Image (cartoon, rainbow over all chains, first blue to last red; front, side, top):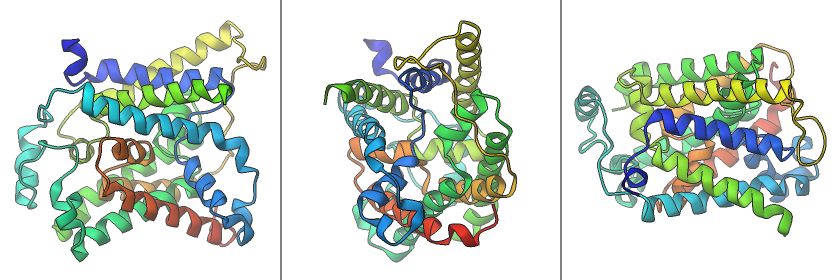
Amino acid sequence: MEYILQPWPWYVSGPLIALVMFVLLYFGRTFGMSSNLRTLCAIGGAGKRVEFFKFDWKNQRWNLVVVFGAIIGGFIAHHFLSNPINIDLNQTTIEDLKTLGFENAGQSLLPPELFSWDNVLNLKSLSILIIGGFLVGFGTRYAGGCTSGHAITGLSSLQIPSLIAVVGFFLGGLIMIHLIYPILF
Amino acid sequence: MGKYIKFFVVGIFFGIVLVKSEAVSWYRIFEMFKFQSFHMYGIIGTAVGTGIVLLLLSRANRVKTIEGSSLKVPLKERGFTRYIIGGTIFGLGWALAGACPGPMYILVGTGAFSILIVIAAALLGTYVYGLLKNKLPH
């Protein structure tokens, strides 16, 4: 039990994520988390206005069930399977974050500077969360997949399109952290 | 209802793994893009490595899905533009919000409800993509 309560090392977590992908394939489905965003738009009635959302979303209900399970899994892991310990970040990362104005890095999953309700209500944090989310939603459909669909499933099946997408993911991420963060914070 | 239970169980497992691996943490994503830790690269690398082996083994053994068809990954359309541009836009958002779609949902379960703002914005982004799809280079 003590091993479960500790953070899991990468060499345990990575293979378990591959197992999730494989089990979904075995069930005749695919591992793709961002498809649910499209499904939710369709359920909300977006199909009436936009062709892209005109599809039978009922076939995608299984994936929404995966999402629902993932939320419950997040609850279980956070409340019952975790010792309250800090994330073991690199000391340099903690220093770097301090210079950017993020204190106590690693003492929670998300930085309170952006995600606490006090800060969410200030224009800067709110804009960051909204623009960040928007880019994820827009980019993932444009690229036809996210980390689960391209980085895990696509690379595991040795698909070139997914490799290009993953290069894009890192290109965007590196631009954001190295070039845009210093301007923002 | 019964046929959905297995997907629910897979989801729970996925949620637990991503929390326990700390991949849902904003800080881990920042650290990854700073190249200051091997942690996230280790996760993605071993996930892909294991995935490759599982898929090769299942192909060699002609594994069938529970529905009886042969187990295979649907192929992505060929192309370049949509993958590099879409991917880069995704990456900008991934680093800015510190979460990709899977972790977004899972974070709701950990009680970080302000992530719902990010999810709502991601839905809007998806909707706007659908709106502009035919005008964008693919």
